[in-house]
Image 1 (cartoon, rainbow, N blue to C red):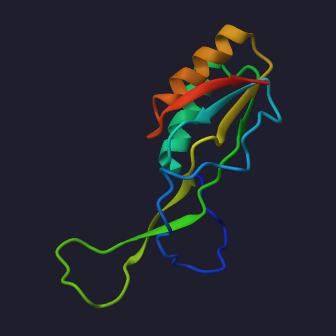
Image 2: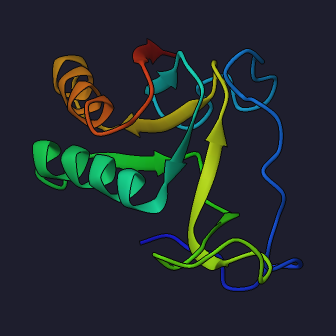
Length: 136
């Protein structure tokens, strides 16, 4: 699973809503020939990224090249169960990447068009955002 080795601040604030904003960076296919683009906003955690990566790898039978264009570096804290209010912020539970609409999540190259589209379609089912497949 993906997690940062070192962070400047251990706990972050939540931030603003990401669903209504549109991404301005990472919106073009740069490395591969096909990409998976997010159409809605959500937090994607490292488990979901890994599940999507495995779906692509399994379908392509380790052929071609995959680029993961997102990295979960935002820490999400969680309080233990049945603990009363007060006592400060909880400890870091997992890491997420806040995805805005328009962001390219995965790219693939080195396989034929039909296989690339099917692999990215399967990966899109593992993610909590609506996606579409785009070409270079």
